[in-house]
Length: 118
Ligand code: AMP
Image (cartoon, rainbow, N blue to C red):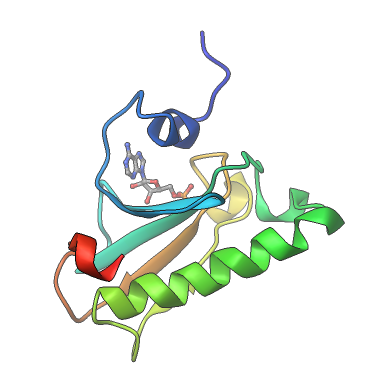
């Protein structure tokens, strides 16, 4: 059995997903089971298990994920109103143990970005 997380398999294209954005540090996908009209996940390529496991040396990556969240919210037309959620640990509802930021917004449509605005 593979020890790779679900999200690492998506990053490696071993599993399908709607990949909306990617760069050298992270990817953004549509959540497969959206809890809002816009529900995207910002996922670092580095498989940090949960937020509280981030190291001092991961500070720049943490900041980058926040910046990307704002960028993709703008691309999805929801930059005026969205929530950013991180579930840390099973007791908080985390089900995929590879750090990810949920972007949730009630307005806008399911994000589809053209090559022009990436
Ligand atoms: P969490 O409960 O915070 O760990 O969030 C995990 C999220 O991953 C949930 O919102 C799931 O719907 C989502 N998810 C699980 N599998 C997939 C998948 N294959 N593609 C996209 N999102 C997924």
